[in-house]
Image (cartoon, rainbow, N blue to C red):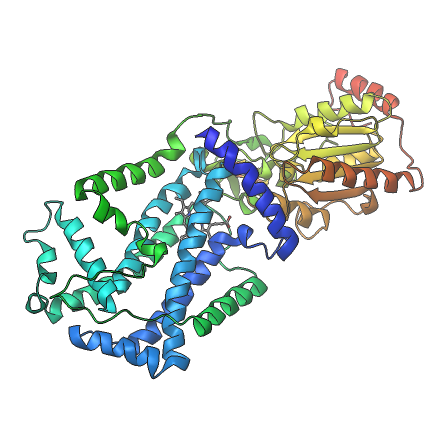
Length: 529
Ligand code: HEM
Ligand code: SF4
Ligand code: SF4
């Protein structure tokens, strides 16, 4: 599986990068695939309701009512029919891209299994919605799809009588069966909506609406396509004849030729194996599950910032259990935690300036503690000549690519895991001339919200914000895909030149500080000189 990811990931990184340059990071369709899926779903729903007003559910009337929309009412009902079809096709395209992209970036394992697994019924429901739609036109394509599908379904011994019998001869099909198909075409998309709701239960603040510009551009493209190439029907169905050459909709019906090539049993086994393999992917090797965030009640004041910032709804605020004079305490649900550390970045007690007691914040990752981070930074401060500190996201450019004199690099699971007080600490206590935060490319944060919260904290729009005393010109942030080492190096180099041009700061030398910090720690405090 990782071999496939090794091929797909760089391909997506380059595609993402290209699309961000063409559309801008905010409008990048690849950053908005889930949201576009919802948008296309709503277009399908609204155009479907409109088309249904004109649709006649009788066997003979169905074809005529669709023909009336397409030809006599081409300017409105016809356009709605085309929008219905093309938005449905677009839904399949974004769904497949979304699935492959989540796989390529490895955003489906561990605690993230839920969104993946609930995606599997979504695939089936999307396909079923489209396929039942093709039946309703009751043209030759509908006849082919209905016959092929029911014969395939009849291979399973679940129906008392073979349902394909309905399509054997003209008088075998009655209006009631046809009404059942209409019902299915409405019920399945409603079930799909339910599945989509479930799909998002474990992510906080899911992006379900694309940016307005992207939505408008996508709609305009569908409208233009509907006007230039309107959706049409084949000749009316005729159960006395076998339909021959057909123009398939490859998005929904692309696998139908297999039903002609293979036996029905083989197609069932293939479909079942494929579905189960996709469903099982979160549990296939490689297995790695980093330790989840832990709350330290002695340092939790119940402020709820961590719960608000957690991108995966893994923290709940519950009644206090330790008798401390706060109403609530943070509780981490381990099965939902993806170990991003963003909660530590949001905790007000996560400050390296603490004088008394060890640096244990209210919440943090056991594998990436803040005391360890501060020790790393202090050690870097001891090394002579460090000017700019780069705090790099573990999912972005590898730190080795940045090592050069004058730069100190520390890696975190996510830039959102850095409490802003550490920036203050680096500038005011470690002798840093500047701090550069290198996160994932804009709009493509591996942990969904790390880059958004980081920017908001730096701009003091979100607590904990960067303290006012921190000179903002000495702090810069940037987003880079993992392959963009040279672009990041250039950006850091430019920052280094900029901070060199600033008036010198009144800070103790790194060596003095290292010695003072060491002395203070030995004396039992955590050493804020
Ligand atoms: C019409 C179909 C679908 C729609 C509209 C849809 C929509 C969404 C949305 C809105 C998100 C949240 C994005 C965010 O804010 O970060 C999401 C996340 C996700 N989806 Fe889908 N999805 C669809 C199908 C699928 C399928 C078929 C799969 C895979 C089998 C899948 C797997 C995932 C995964 C793994 C996540 C990421 C959750 C995380 O970051 O941990 N989705 N989807
Ligand atoms: S942010 Fe820190 S102090 Fe606030 S509730 Fe969470 S753990 Fe407790
Ligand atoms: S590390 Fe913290 S913010 Fe990240 S998922 Fe776990 S509890 Fe949520």
